[in-house]
Amino acid sequence: MPHPLPILYTFRRCPYAMRARMALRVAGIDVELREVSLRDKPPELLTASPKGTVPVLVLPDGVVIDESLDIMRWALAQHDPEQWLAPGGQMDEFIATNDGPFKFHLDRAKYANRYPGTDPAYHRGEAVKLLLPLEVRLAKHGLLFGNTPSLADIAIFPFVRQFSRADETVLTGLPLLKAWLMTMESSEVFRAVMEKKEGAEEGRAAAK
Ligand SMILES: N[C@@H](CCC(=O)N[C@@H](CS)C(=O)NCC(=O)O)C(=O)O
Image (cartoon, rainbow, N blue to C red; front, side, top):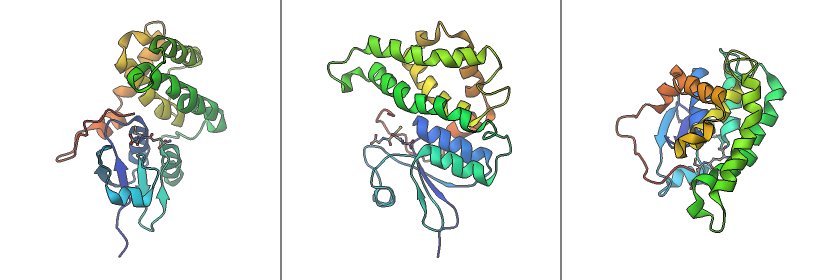
């Protein structure tokens, strides 16, 4: 018997998992959420995706999607009621900068102890520089690709949130981005996917 609902292995505070949960929710796709402990990953997760990162979506037919952006795109391909995909390929470089260099510097600014010999202040500065093009875009419209949310807004803001939670002064010179982050954090979809589920495990390991 195939499992009736897709299973999403997730970690509540993981920014990659957050964006996947948001896309699934806006697309109206019901999933069985399995909150995992990053320190003690369930064997079924590792069997489905040996690389051992979350989020991982396992479809009823056994297909496994183990990259958060792929989960977002898969969900929105089913149903995209808010037109998050509408801006198309112009979003790609912004998402790639976020997932690549920005995340690289964010990790080194935030978790300096995991990267011996690195200077967190340098990486903080580099991360802030990478946010400047977003501030410029927000001078033109309320969100990154217009006045309604796009895949890029949803894919990027959990990481900007993580950055500003580590040190709230990082957005001081970026007032529009700060306002954007507040808008994204107060959205219904974000609040809904951050709700603590009854009995869900809150892993103690810090989200990467
Ligand atoms: N490129 C992956 C990255 C996912 C990722 O790195 N997730 C972190 C948690 S935020 C993780 O699972 N790390 C493995 C670990 O901490 O053991 C994606 O977009 O899904």
